[in-house]
Amino acid sequence: MTKEEIYKARLVELQPLIFALQSAIEIFGRDKARELAEATFAKYADDRYVRDFENTPLDERWAKFVEDILNAADDNQYSVDLHEENMIKIRYQWCVFLEIFKKFGLEDFVPLYCETDFVTCQKVHPGINLIRTETLAMGAPYCDHCWEYAPE
Image 1 (tube, rainbow, N blue to C red):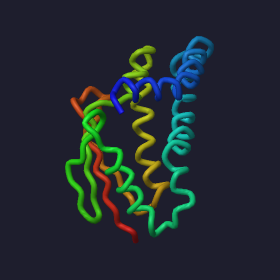
Image 2 (cartoon, helix red, strand yellow):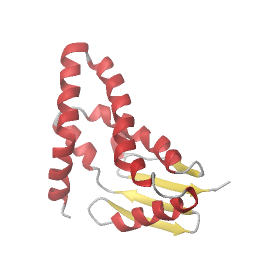
Image 3 (cartoon, helix red, strand yellow):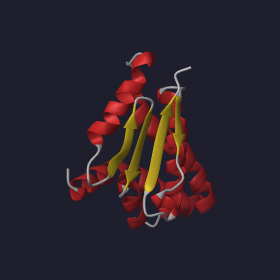
Image 4 (cartoon, helix red, strand yellow):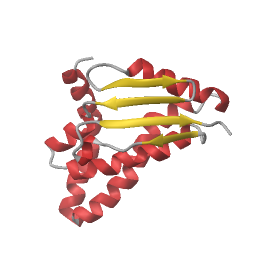
């Protein structure tokens, strides 16, 4: 998919959430809206990422997790920097979530969404650990994600 196609598809998906956050800001203020966003992003991440693994046996989840990452890698969003048996590193060059939230003046909410990555991978499998030192949402030129797998 092109960046434009990715953007359009995710915009349709995210618009109800964005409208709800804009309304929350108007009614309750930005701080309370951030609390709402934090809880909502956790549910969104579960639905978007964790649900795909519900019917996968625990001992097969790491392989599926890696396969999904490898299959989705492209020049538009992210590339794979390293792939070993128990580790995969990727580098996001572009974040559609950030781009959409910027358009609506909500870019300061995106780091809250980024934080869901740590919990999400643990929900996929408790042996998956995410290490990240850079994020586009915090102004870095890329996001680095390194998942290490230790099944026990």
